Length: 430
Ligand SMILES: [Zn+2]
Image 1 (tube, rainbow, N blue to C red):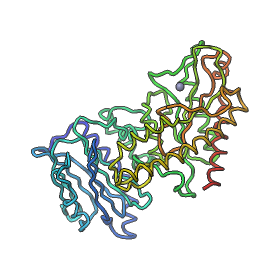
Image 2 (image 1 turned 90 degrees about the vertical axis):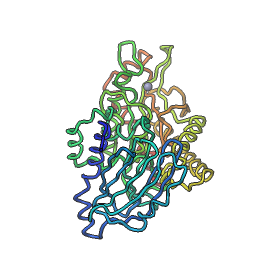
Image 3 (image 1 turned 120 degrees about the vertical axis):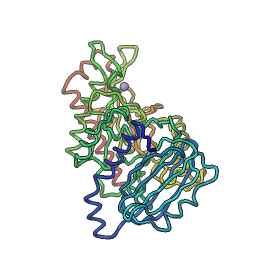
Image 4 (image 1 turned 60 degrees about the horizontal axis):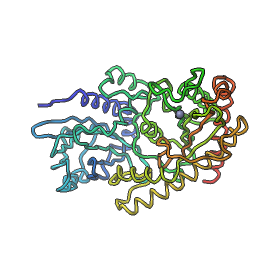
């Protein structure tokens, strides 16, 4: 008997959305140069989950569903023909894999390849695809989490757009709307970002703006009742307009009054493969006399703990660590991540200096230099990230500034110009 939970149904609908949108282009491409070829399969048991990766020459259309007694996960890949590479998947299961008892692939219908995973326990699967990167081609990824573990579900939050609702509240209609929006990305593209040094020079720079706080988290509140969450959203929207007129692709972690967890903000930047991440805030202090604009980057302690966490999460991720292909060797991976992170911290400082210089033309600076702090939102190991404190909302004079349209507008000008100058020199450097 197929028994699906509400969540699984939503996930299937979501999977359908991912796989249906590219049909037209996929058909056109197939006519041009043949069906997808399976080129590699990998199975990596990690502490928290086991990842199954199917690599192919073209993006795959797929559906998955669960079966019970015994527990199985079934994945149907449409428009594909089995080959020896995919058949070899059955030999890749390690006997001590915590989730997979066995796995097999076969031609289920003339047009459908079926992969059946026999499970040792009931699982919470996350199935998604990754676009080609580096030496990797298209990948279909099946992550098997223990039942009840949701891994904070950043994937569903991304899929749901800016408002991180629970998956259960995504309606069929919302999925339909997403499917019909032509400019919506086909996949969340989670899990990796190309490090700056290997990015293609022809791609338009992508900037992720992160207005702090939102929803039930108002941020700091000024004497007059001015709320940080509203100020920074308006500054971010202005900044987005400026940056777009400069020719950049710009996304925002939120574009409405909604609460977004910090890890989701970082996940969004990575999913969009952002080149630059700028979090926008207004400062507050117990003394109302504190004032001035500031820019923060991640400190070394924060970077070190983020690296440890990141490695722990992705230790056995066969496809990317900070966008760099994993070697499968913990020490090599550590070294690669370390190099990526060192480059990112250097770039963050350059970005911070560039933005601070521009903001210094607008307002007194709280400190004359870029400051360091252990902010969770700055912890992407592969995206230059800064946090801008526009001014002190706790200072009555600066609160007036923050309330004014002209100051917000000039703030946006400064942030955008600072980003632009950073990107221009970064491109020259590459
Ligand atoms: Zn804040």
